[in-house]
Image (tube, rainbow, N blue to C red; front, side, top):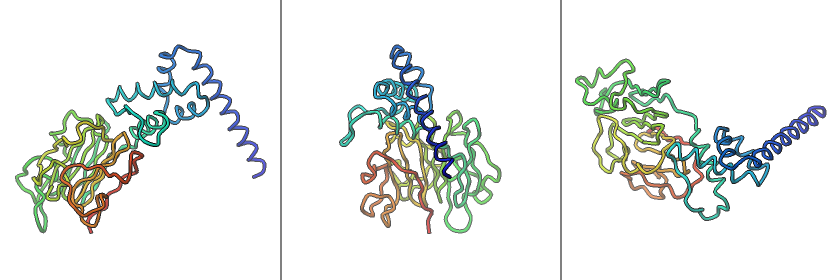
Amino acid sequence: RSRRAPMHRATRATAARQEAHAAALLTELPADIAAYVLFHLDVLSLARLACTARKVQPLVEAALRMRAAEASAWTPASLPSGELSFLPLLLRSDRRRSLPQQLISAGSWHSLFVDAEGQIYSCGVERSAGPDRRGLLGHGVLSDLAVGIPLPSPILALAGVKIRSVAAGNKHSLAVGWDGALFTWGRSADGQCGHGDVERKAVPTRVQQLAGVCVVAAAAGGYHSVVATDSGEVFTFGSGARGRIGHGDEKDRRVPSRVQAIGTRGCALAASPPP
């Protein structure tokens, strides 16, 4: 152990010297060229460079703003209370856009899949014992709810939309596009589809209330939904029973409502299934 510690310190010192040298070279370049070079680095490397030299921070900020603009993503227009710089906000936003994809999800009665091209598939049934679940699979009105779709089949309503993440709930589903659009379908008796009503949707329908933000992750519970945006905001909708949607009461929300207690730093998402 005593021999390894000096080796680790030497490795860190070498890395620090290399980062300092890279920062010095970048500051000698024209600002637009330096920002273009930084544009192609991963977010961790950008964060390290920003910590290495104060002079390179404006260049890192410019590169992050370029990346956000290319992705049609959120950029801060003013500093929130408690923040001293735009740079941490932009770094967190960039990191959220790099969140791992959720390419498979298993609900109570169905499953969702996303292939390498971003096409979404579903399979399962829309009726078994108990109430029917029309629209759960996203293929419109099926001729035989009990037979359903036994093999994964592409959801045609989302053809041409590249999907990054899916979430299968008990009786509803969510899909997040790479462009930040959120689509939901299935049962919405508690408002869990987020369209402002309790009407079920037989095909994926974009949640218009979130059209102005970039959604990066979603989770589906039994009777509610949770989504996060690239700005770090978290929205919930659906049944508020037992405080499950985080608004300090038990009221249902039929449209996405921001969870004020979380602020803008975001969180990892996991919604619980029904009991």
